[in-house]
Image: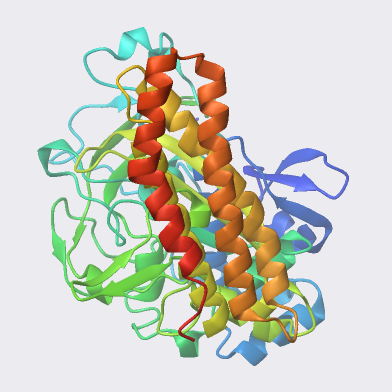
Length: 484
């Protein structure tokens, strides 16, 4: 008897309810109860976002909101229209779509087995990019070869593997956004609200919406290494950059898979993701990716710039859908990768709320940009002021991190002040620059107090402060006016 797993009815989506209880639900039960659930919840931020994104694509295909007014009407209903979702499922089945994860010819969200590409089975844990690999992997992980995934976990990891794949050896390519960027979603008062507010209307999409159809409906053969110059919104949102085929055992557990190169999307300049932040300069457009050099707050002005296609579309849309609300609740998901390598450094998830009054506010954006630029100038000078040979690099980095943490602690309340009527922008700039200068000095002094340096060394360090930090502070203190 072959294994079977109906993704519509059998539990696999990890959720948290209002009381903090965890559960796994099938798709239809999740949609039926979405207004009673808090959020999708998984220990891995990558899985959490990948599952959330799939739910959005499924809903977009089924409900097809044409305008923001349609999204507003859906929010007013307070729950998903199950009759329309059931009609969609029935239509899919009439067209030959299988929702069986282990269907022999049409396994859900997978490629069918092809001997020319699927030559050697791999451990199912290969889907987890966060597991160290390579010549020394045994020193980091001693049990991954023995992994057996439940059908639900295998499906979740399959989604993560498609969503967060990056370029690697032997020609493996990234997804439609290149190396994984930061993905932003709205964190609503319940899962229903989060999903609807993270969708976009079809009239805001410049690409064809459903030609080709969503991956589970499409009859396109996922041809290894095939270059794709055009795609649809539905297909691109879950683009098959990998060929993945789960190999179920008789009990439905999965210990092996087929994994190989999928298709190669080569028109990234045409792809605009509703959850991604973009930057524009004289070299063109790039997306915002996690970095070890800069924290989220050091790129905050990009999220505030809701015009010109910079901030994710869903942020400005939320403000229009809920004009009475004071904050936009946002969750960022990302993974820092090594450049040009399929290796992962850190996985991140960050929650925060942006005051609605500062979104798209040119004065606020200008102030935040100046705040960040001033903090980074002081951080650089602080490092130079502690550049004595008897002060280790770790101590210098700790001093800068301490300073940056203090700056971040001031930035969030500052955004609230910016949202108030009658705010004197120039006065705020003067106050914040003065405070940052004081914080830079205090962080240098705190570091020196921890080190107990010799008298001669202290004199040399003081000379470094006079040479690097003090001139920067004097320049900043003279700057107080805003060009805006």
